[in-house]
Image 1 (cartoon, rainbow, N blue to C red):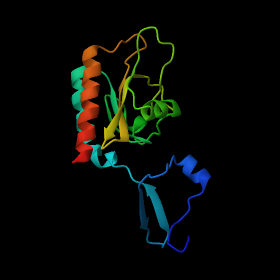
Image 2 (spheres, rainbow, N blue to C red):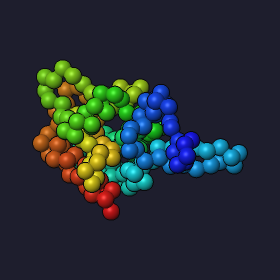
Image 3 (cartoon, rainbow, N blue to C red):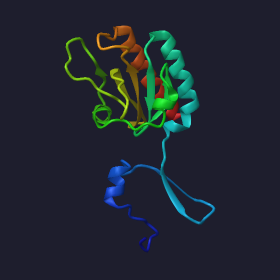
Length: 171
């Protein structure tokens, strides 16, 4: 801790926890007097709303849907919540989201993107959720099988969902 009260978090911990420059952290103490640093997830504040929203999207598309903050899955529709909630996003998925461009799996694409570590689900559509110019999370429509081709309506619905959730974050 320096004279201004700033704390340096070692590089290895920042890398492991995916803490980036400017990321908000929650700081609190427990009953034993330990100081705890926790990454703050603005979109995590909407997890109950996001869960309801995923269910509505599933009914509209018949595709499983996940909503993630920048690190973990916070809501899932038509998937085992126990299997996917709080699971870390994969490095490939993080790269897609950080690019700020939509990902759409097209027929003949060799590359599949698994949005979450440790599960065998592939994204058919993935979009960043952007709020006030910052990436705060992502939404992914999971392909029911390898042959599935997202429709233009599925893509547009995913775009609307990402935009809507971004606007909710600004409220």
